[in-house]
Length: 97
Image 1 (cartoon, rainbow, N blue to C red):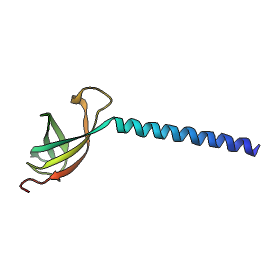
Image 2 (cartoon, rainbow, N blue to C red):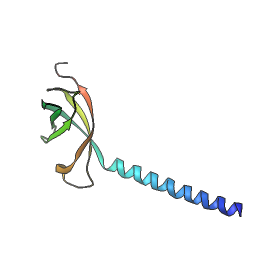
Image 3 (cartoon, helix red, strand yellow):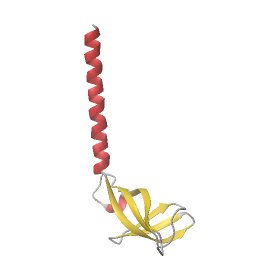
Image 4 (tube, rainbow, N blue to C red):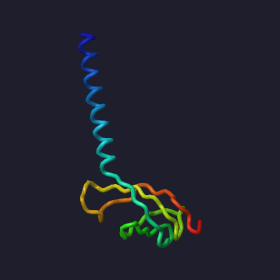
């Protein structure tokens, strides 16, 4: 009886591990990196132009006009860039450096 319970628990652990790995792989496939420049800042909303000319908006009080930033974007599992979201922003180059 103990061996049967042990096998069941190992099976459950294996299934949960597989789902965790699949979920992580799906997350990685759904994100991509892009560089952009902060065009302007109004209150805490940044307008960022990426290297392809798309304009993105992001809430932050850390960056200023002219800063070059690296963005991690989530693609929402679509092929259109227009519904993608910035999920992380980091400074690549401070303006006037």
